[in-house]
Amino acid sequence: MNPELITILKNNGLAIVATDTLYGVLGNAQSEAVVQRIYELKGRDENKPFIILIPDIASLAQFGVEISDAEKEKLLQWWPASLTVILSVAEDKQEQFSYLHRGTNELAFRMPHKELLLELLKETGPLVAPSANPQGKEPAHTIEEARDYFGDKVDHYEDEGRVEGLASTIIRLKDGEITVIRQGSVSVF
Image 1 (cartoon, one colour):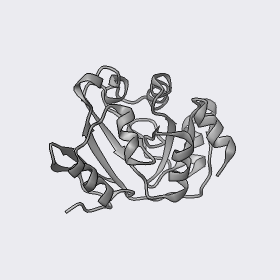
Image 2 (tube, one colour; image 1 turned 180 degrees about the vertical axis):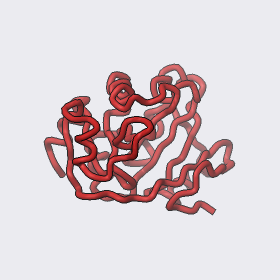
Image 3 (cartoon, helix red, strand yellow; image 1 turned 180 degrees about the horizontal axis):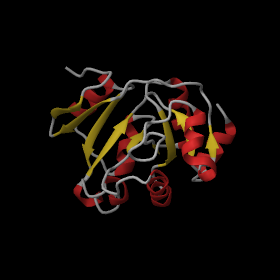
Image 4 (spheres, helix red, strand yellow; image 1 turned 135 degrees about the vertical axis):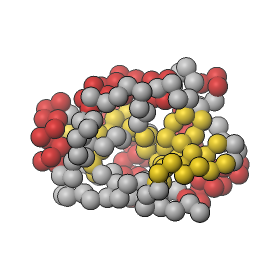
């Protein structure tokens, strides 16, 4: 594990890192300033929330997400995996996390199956991780492509060669009901 990368992310810097799917722009999910910086960097639609990478189920509580024991059991069956799960933010926490949910009152989480990334998350805590590209452009598959997009506007680039991951499956888990939003590399049924 690169100690410089951990220090940068813990100090609210931005890093381009290979996730379990593609290269992503990683930043502290609990910093409104960091999240806003990534929106500006990517030129991203302000109403489109980011995926949050988490190291464990307990991290959900840090974002005002309350799940039933049955939902927790379901998540533990699936995760870690290339599966993004959209969960509701508790009503009394919606304002606090509006910088993340962007008015949807829901947040999307993934506990990645990539061991190095899980280790990083255990050190840094939850990270937002949108793909490494400006909105409307092809996601970066190499560090060189990411550098071409962002140059010195990112604090650190972690080169892991060419990344050609499959998109994650996205589901919504609400009131015990599962809705598939996008079928990707993981099947939940």
